[in-house]
Image (cartoon, rainbow, N blue to C red; front, side):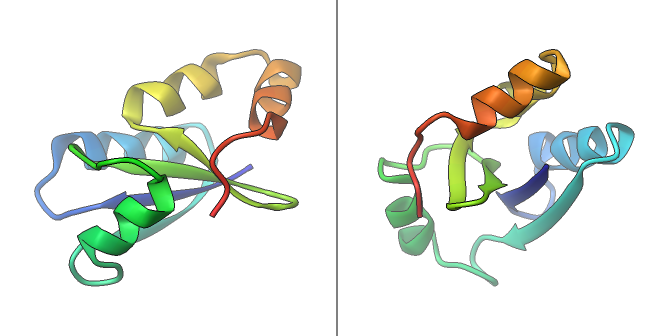
Length: 95
């Protein structure tokens, strides 16, 4: 599983998300909002107003799928391996 994290500097949940991925040995790419992507571009990717960071996507065979924030990723990673893969394969907002 590869994760794409959209966050910003000095964001506690963004830092927790990166740490979670490192602890779980999950490959991730971190993109800084306002530098690597604008807030408007991120909102277009998410498909709804973005009110908090991080915003997280999981890379699937058909493109990135929207997961949500830190808690949503934590829940996904806590699921048994088969369920996590199944959840990541479910239809979601695709960029």
